[in-house]
Length: 389
Ligand SMILES: *Cc1c(COP(=O)(O)O)cnc(C)c1O
Image (tube, rainbow, N blue to C red; front, top):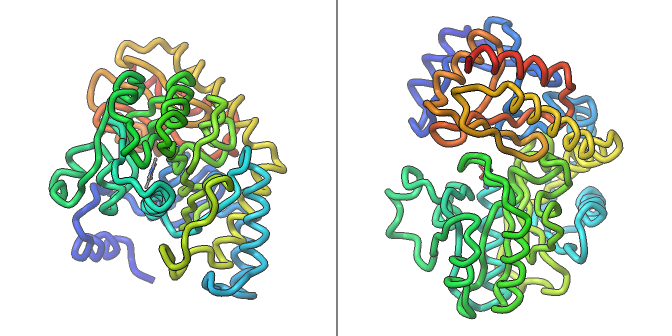
């Protein structure tokens, strides 16, 4: 066992440098709590970036991982597998309309890459439209649609055929989406960009524009999906059905998994046009099944809707001078501050043992596990009131 000072030194000596890091090591987790190297307990309102929908080490997940690890861990899609079949059926039961075709992969960015390839294959078109403030991941294709110049600029010359338009601007969408556009990619609630929920009318207008031009509507549900916003998928708030949508983060309750889903009406993609070594392996499929059935059986989507609304109302009722706006849907909540978010995150962690996230430079973001109780949310509200007073 490495002693804790050494742990920091080793990481610093070898990390890529890509990550801004907090001087805290998380060594253990249970439910909504995570524990650091000194045994301090934190209320984890990050869910590890929206991943642990059921909290840390939920018994259903631990059991699924353990049992499947003793049965079969890997099985490429060149073979059939019982867990994968079961997961397909479960996903079909929670997706609307004929969203019945899936490609399984290992991360959000990979799901976005997959969605782009599917769109290209289905339409034989080049053009992609994305939105300002969007975040779709860090691989080359996904990055080309991500907005933040800090992430994208050093690689800009690699990324053709993408036009960015303002999020929510229907006229701009009408102007740039044409019969040469393969797809428009959009988050139903922008996460990383500052927690901006789309107006239902915006997504409805995009649906109509796509229908008119034969463009595919891709919704990125990697952060907002799997119950977080109080619906299984955030596009459901607008009552629309996308052609393609992506999943990641919470889909397997903590294990790395991504998925692309598209409408049966569009058919399959041609043989050998895509693939993944680890994608859809039995271990993550079993864990995803445990995650989704627990969310369904414990009614956590409804609970996220109700507790999220209550949480947002409590935060608004604080009426804090230093807060410009409280935004969000379900348990995906952002407070846009008048100042920088970094000192606020530090104060929440150090003075109140609460872990929260930034979304851009000035938005404080909460992505608590869906199992969080009102008492625990109240603890966050009280801490916010003190820290932002
Ligand atoms: C996190 C995120 C991604 C990227 O997922 P990774 O697993 O980090 O590659 C893509 N889109 C959205 C909306 C995200 O929140």
